[in-house]
Amino acid sequence: MNERIILSHYCPITELPPSQAIKILPEKLSTFGVKLPPSHLRAIYSYFHNTLIKHYALYRFVLTRERDRHQTFGNLEVYAPPSPLPLREGMELEAWKYEQKLAALSATEDEKRADMAHIRETLHTQRENLLQEVYKSTLQEIIQHEIQTTFEILQLKLQKRALILNPPAPYPPPPSPKAQEKQGSKVQKKSSENQQKREEKKKKQKKK
Image (cartoon, rainbow, N blue to C red; front, side, top):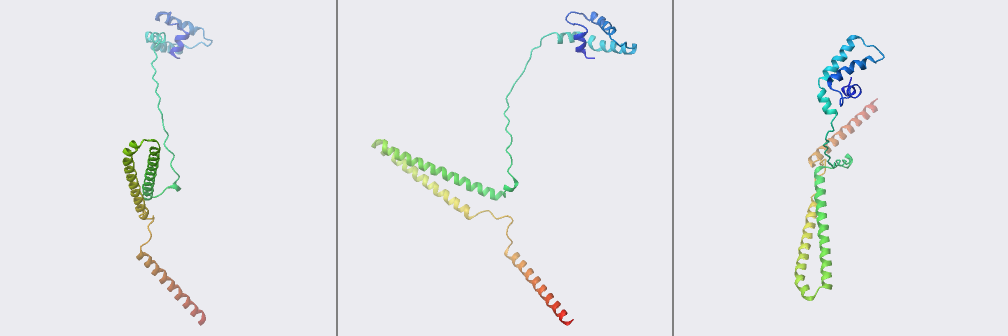
């Protein structure tokens, strides 16, 4: 049996004291359609007293008072990890690093070229719109910036050229010249032995 069922159906705790609540239980049990044996009745009475009546004041306090609700809400944005690429698209670490360096140099070069285009556009706009005095004061600074950017682009081209001329070693590495020579000697020796065996076999056939 559940204590809350007993409270709600057998004893209205908002009106009855514990002494009257104890009297209600035998009355309710006597109305059951099935007559319980004395051992079952004693077990019910014992359970009733050890649970509801023993903590009657506590149940009455908890179940008859409106309690304050304290709720805390928070928003947590969760990002799923990126899906890994297929294994067939993988590459060696050194080759990946090489491609990353090359891509970084290309991106920097493109950025410098964009800066150069912006500088030239600014210079052209100033030539058209600014007065002669302002033009003279800013011309030297713009030209110096253009020279510096051109020099940086040349440095990037040299770095890219150096990377292209020194790619990472292929994997697996090719056999050394000694290994190739040794392999060729083995193949040639085996071919000679096979040729000698065929000739001996022909001689034996002729003798027969």
